[in-house]
Length: 151
Picture 1 (cartoon, rainbow, N blue to C red):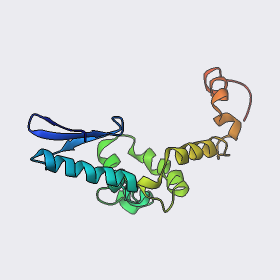
Picture 2 (picture 1 turned 45 degrees about the vertical axis):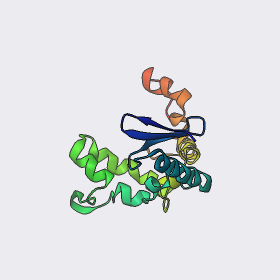
Picture 3 (picture 1 turned 30 degrees about the vertical axis):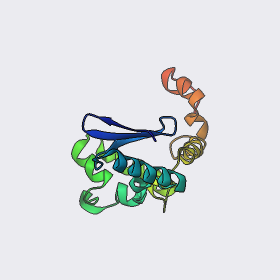
């Protein structure tokens, strides 16, 4: 067992330092070991850390088409309105995300799904330019040098 006491708090550490943290409710070494066994069981069952990703993306972001900028209390767009100058841009920036990840919770959105979305966006045709203008190798020639090539 890898439980240690630092000061007055017990800490767990297992999985080659992959999983570690505090056990604030443990008062004795036995209680800390029992809490560590429960955490190891959660890792084995695939439940460890899942409680944070249970909110649906649409509920987290809010409704970008809401009238009078009433996005919903506690949503990302509501936070952006109160804390960012560019909050109006976030309204149209979240629409493709909501379409791509419709019906998924935050925990179901994996790094692979994000990379797949970015690749699809990169090669998609937009209203302003064709997809070649969005390719990273073309951006320097188009934006910095003022290329005469019309997209």
